Image (tube, rainbow, N blue to C red):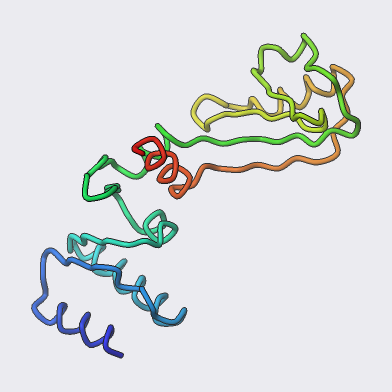
Length: 170
């Protein structure tokens, strides 16, 4: 309730800029959802919101621009989509039906990596440069006589980027 009162008090002046310092720390799930709906409405209404948070997944969902601070030092400020494009990426993991000892020469152009066990091929890509590449890759894998049992994808999150940046800074 204290958190609600503080936010109501801050909004009573109809600010054009609103500073929120860890607004969802220690609140229940229901209040967290309500707060983010309110923040979205304020943003859509033209209010500039400066948010500090340790909940990186929340920042990824709601922020337009991201600033990363490590030990009091501002490391970067970037448009979120640009940051995700520059430092993020996607990974396709192809689980093979049977292990292989090396990547066939026919697949060299794909810059694949092979897991230590030989049971998985890994393809790093981004949306902009891929343009149907996954379908062509899978056709090439099949044409090389390699059967696959499963596929999975992983997209770099803002948290992954944050950890890599902070790690580099130390």
